[in-house]
Length: 399
Image 1 (cartoon, rainbow, N blue to C red):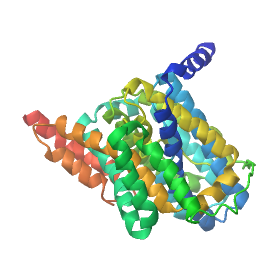
Image 2 (image 1 turned 45 degrees about the vertical axis):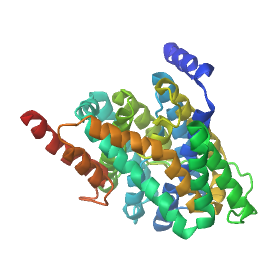
Image 3 (image 1 turned 180 degrees about the vertical axis):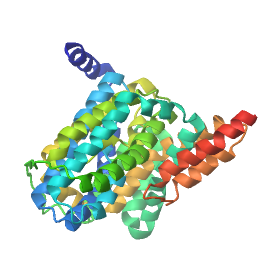
Image 4 (image 1 turned 90 degrees about the vertical axis):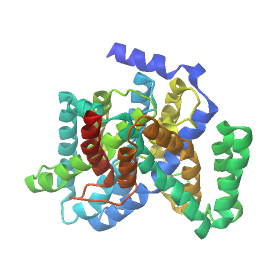
């Protein structure tokens, strides 16, 4: 334990590795990561009859657990490992929690994360990750990230007065400094929202979160109907694409370590209304991509900053809910889109470069990843990898 604490302390406080781009990337990653799934959380609350206190507790538990695990994993490995909740899991819970006593739902959350922990302990997941070729991983990552760029473009239709100035500024600043382009867009977006009155600041107030502890109950029906789907969705929709994304940026991640840290944190957070904490498959590109820092070995600070912001947001979860309900979604879309352009370009380049003999497979993977293909309630990320592997190895063996 002393060695673990010493390693975390030594690695975390290598201040010479800290940079302003990492700071900006970390902050933006959390803003982008909260914007979409938070809406789904309120849909879950409505369908399951959760109270405002339980929703605030959910956000608190998610933020604190994600923040601590992001800092811990990134400090130990010196890699930008950013954690998030299982977005496919939230979408599933919109209907999955209907009619289920919440105590039993909490028990199901715990069982789901115990199953994931077992996967990490046995080393099964490491072998799965190692079997995914770089071209497939990169194509998958590009497909996951591309919708962010498309949403940024679509924002021009709905809020041109916000989207156009932000996009134009990005490319102007990028001519002089790629490092400061995203930061400039971030500041301009906030200024535009406040100036144009599209961001309602009158309702904002500091409000500390009060966690709500729910005693778990373990019902067989809830375990079958909630635990198993949550586990499959987390592994296929978050762990697999999230860790594959890290590979596409050139990081050799200890996947077993990540699974263990995330699942243990999830078990602890579950009684406070949170489901699964896992590697992000969407905002990973912001902290692991070139905009976080040109030096691969210094990008881990972006995830550490993100972890700190997570903890701040969690502490003020009530205030955060009010803040994001007042921020125009178009501003978030543009911010996410420009933040991920370099990551998308790098992933596409890697996908094609790594498989020069036959570019069809990465293109197929990319196409499936950007689609809305869903089979057995499992989303396109899993099917993109599965079909990519089925196509890749026979072709490679033949070559």
